[in-house]
Image 1 (cartoon, rainbow, N blue to C red):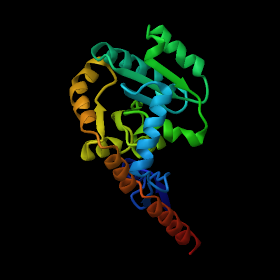
Image 2: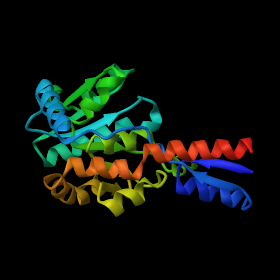
Image 3: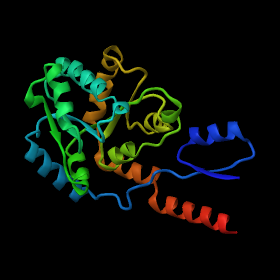
Image 4: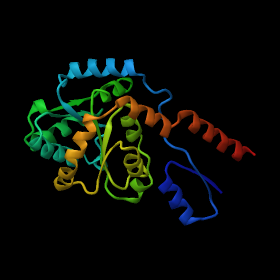
Length: 238
């Protein structure tokens, strides 16, 4: 029996069920070519100017509005952080239910100039991501999330973003800590966030987006994943 999974925890999960299973780990390497320095700088300048956020530290969430994305919790953390820092902006990129997301901001008494909610074409998402500074990825603790390898995480890194993630999301926690790609919240609450605001600001001050992009390219090698899938199919055929 042969199984393809997307993360180390997923491989361990399968092995615990059946130690005899042959497990191949193939990461979600969705970006074929990393963006270069000039293109990054041009896109960042253009889209930050377009949004009027040139002097802001920009949190970004990109994805669906489904409840497991924990958007209310993200916005609640943002509200808390914005009380401690005056230069924050939250950019939400979502193709549906944007009105519902806006209601969460309004319910938490966040003024219109503190956030932007956009629905953009898929080919433009990366440009808007590069306008940001911190990509947000929060999940509840469940077996599905423990074995996952979210595409969102890969996209954030390929846009040169630092990340703010919760624990128990595949092997993202290990990658973030090992390669200093952002912060990992032990719990999704204000007190936990407060502990990390200082270190996060220091990381933002020293952030090298191209270094993050290159690290993403190394961790999620597109050619490597294509070859790995090809090898798996060859094994099946033989």
